[in-house]
Length: 264
Image (tube, rainbow, N blue to C red; front, side):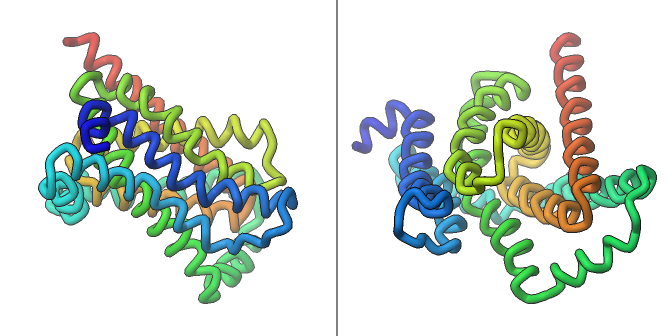
């Protein structure tokens, strides 16, 4: 088994991440859609999100012994990245949220919708679901794998844009059980979700390239999830605005990468 992991590290990582997550996520999806009689509890989803983390630890151990997992865990403690990258990683989603609220207001969104949303999220259950489950746990389960193990190996072979495009469909389809567990979602939501994942992947490659810190990637992932949740609680207009702003930022990053490559 270790020989296979060493020979095919990326394929092994993807397979193990999917196996862990889907083994829990598929029963959850079937339960929420009423296709099985069992009532799978909601807390299964944040546990299933740790598939990439577990897979990364196993593959890293096969590749480099104990030093492999230690290197990834060390990157989770790497916070000395300079003030500019710290601001990009932790505060850029907050800035985009504030801008999205301004855009929503300019489009006629009433400010009276903010107070009920904040009141609902201010409850203990609302904060735990938004910050801990949707933000920290989701990012903690994913980033040590996607950005801690997969992206560095793709970056050794490709430029930032091609590495991101190579990782994007794998990261996207890994989410399928979670997406399908929401019966109200259809094809339109899947297309929007796919664009959102690609946008996030571009931002995260930029942050990884600039910091070599899984912690910074984890921070951006968690904060952007929280900001998206806040925007959705305010209004659909605010949620669409922040999603489009994240996409716009990703397009600017991709254009900059392309321009740099053409300059050699």
